[in-house]
Image (tube, rainbow, N blue to C red):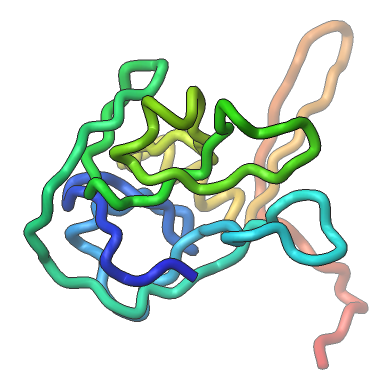
Length: 164
């Protein structure tokens, strides 16, 4: 596990356990994030995704660098922030290693990006769809006479099913 002093800028968004992209400045100790193993676990060929928990979150002032990705996304982080990267000197079959942000240009042509971040969509339609997927709904499509029809409705349990 990396020591707690590697930082991203407070406006950079991270993916939380409830699948929200939250600015770092809003995260607190105890919040859970989607993360991956620092090293490849024994018996595996790749790192595994895990839930991690923030143990410390406080503002700090350190020297920073701006990492610009191929799609022009820029991320401001401390110079010592580790990036999982494909190094120039990595032989085939050797696991990827982390490279400090201030050494990316000299050591690694590519960093690994797990996913893009997103802004929450807060519209009536997105709320309706979220309710159908997360709540008591179902969505299905049928085709009759070459016309597509869609229907939605509440999920129903058979009257004979019992809980407990």
